[in-house]
Image (cartoon, rainbow, N blue to C red; front, side, top):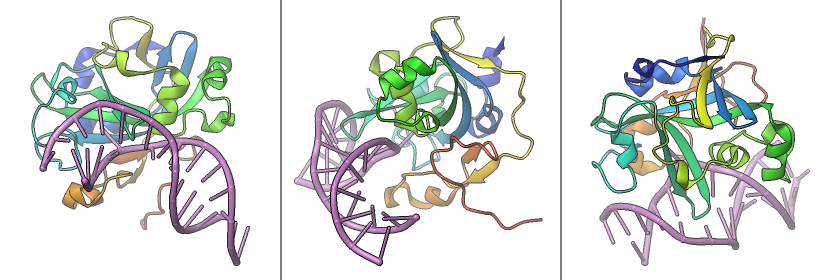
Length: 200
DNA sequence: ACCGGGATGTTCT
DNA sequence: GAACATCCCGGTG
């Protein structure tokens, strides 16, 4: 494992997202590999929380890169994003699925009903398994704290799975068909399959 | 396997 | 008052 440079995240989320695949999320003893992400942008992305400008809830998205944006949704779930771009620009990568690597006992304790492969297979499942809640909104992932992001020896896939983002409604307008979801091919821990794409 | 609905509360219209 | 970047369970085939 090695640390990320801050500058890695000071780019558009759409660029960063596929390069975050196979990186590791570490929280204390718990470690999990990123296998699925989505890119969100404020200014030109109707699917983003930040589309209509800053609010108390989405303020972290406008903050410095390399910090975590945590939001609460559906009255019971937390989801986590890695903030990208320079301060003032809302851009973030949603963590959608992780493959558990270590600290499985703690994850099982946090999600007693779950099978191992589904411990982190979803944006709200992974926050539950890792113990990420509201208090982590704004946390710096690069300051060597308990919660951090690390590079692994395994590089991002050369040909990631690509698809449309999950869970957006008609309010997201044309962005519902933008291919801003990325995944590690063959991973058993995806939140849902990627529809097959014609090609080559 | 697929589908439908309930849980739960914050945020913005 | 409606929507929500979700998850889980219980029905049916």
